[in-house]
Amino acid sequence: MNYNEAKVRAGEAVCLEAGFYPMAAADLSFQQKLRRLEMLTELNQRTTVNSLHISLNFHPSEQFSDERLKELAEEFLDRIGFTGQPYLLYQHFDAGHPHVHLVTTNIKADGKAINLNNIGKDRARPACVAMEKAYGLVSTAGQKNDLTERFKPVNVQRALYGKMETKRAMNGIINVVAGSYNFTSLAQLNAVLGLYNIVADTGGEGSRVNRFEGLVFRVLDASGNKVGVPIKASDFYEKPTLKKLREKFKKNELKRDGLKKNLKTKIDLALLGGGKSLEKLVAELKGGAVDVVVRRGKDGVIYGMTYVDHKNKVVFNGSELGKAYSAKAVLERCQNIGAGEEKKQNGEAEKLGVGGYANAGKGRDPSREFVPGDGSAAGGRGLAEVLLDAGELREVMDWELKRKKKKKKRLRLSPG
Image (cartoon, rainbow, N blue to C red; front, side, top):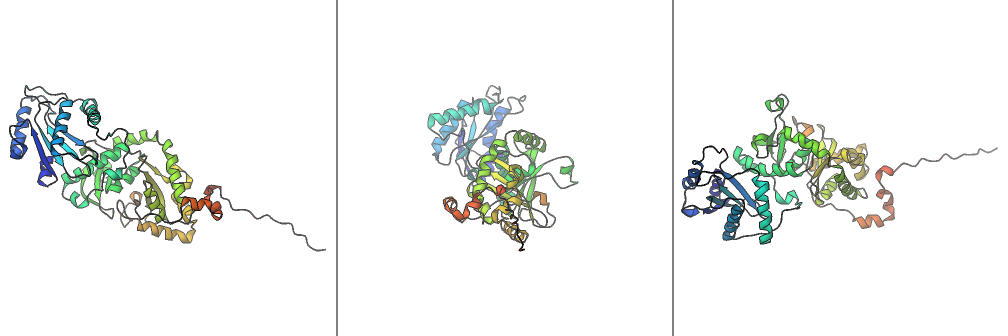
């Protein structure tokens, strides 16, 4: 209730309904709303979990009247076994899609508790599916929505307000990224989180967090600096602790190989023809739902690249895809650069440092540096023009197959 009422006070939500209350929601004070639920929880002192907080989310194309939202919320509660239970219905306006929150109790008027065991899997999910079919709602089954369409980076200024505001801003993004992306290291997880101004941090060497193998999540500003209040992994609902993430790393290793081919093809097509700057390559891949994370050492020289494929929800280091996709090889394939040109390419990478981990500075850990791809649409000729140009045939060949032709030694006959 505190969470939802705080949203109401901030102008980000309204209390639409007080179901099975003696008065309308608009006529109830905070204490009156709370007391109605407390009167039931006091009837059962044995049950430790005596409240339920539900979020019902709809597709952005589905816009409902207040009355319709009330009807859908009440039917949902009926379907999960909460018929007749008092509840509060809040409509939130802090996201890009319509959604409501329900607050209720599982203690009934006779003091008995409604069983909450596996309620999400056994009752809530089937209720959602049934209602989607009954009312023609957009189904969530099998959807692979681009994360960038569902979330915006954490608002750094709002996150500075304190722990509760920071946690609310981070929770949804961390849960979805950790739950739906395939990654095999903390650095790869951070490659995705960094796109949303979040980092999973194991603490500095010798720190308490580091000594006890803890994990905290922090908000990042536009320069990649950690700001706001650190939140322990165990404080989040899904508890993405280092131990749990390591187990996930192992499981993800077993189901990655089949996801490489599509990503490699995208990179090859983006590099087709050569003569392309790193900045344009990053922008072109971003247009194909692939973010490129460029890692640099203290001297600013690029030493690694990580690819975040949002369509297939997978993260790969360049070296995992093959030698041709490592940082060194990609720079060579861009413009066949030599030692003199390498500084120029690294200079272009500096320009890409917007959002997430930005340009490495003094005192920064270069192993954690990355630069999310962000730029304008790539220019250059189209694929058809490249393929039809006979002068480009040599460049279209797989770069690894190119070999310098050795000059044949000719036998010279001397006179006499």
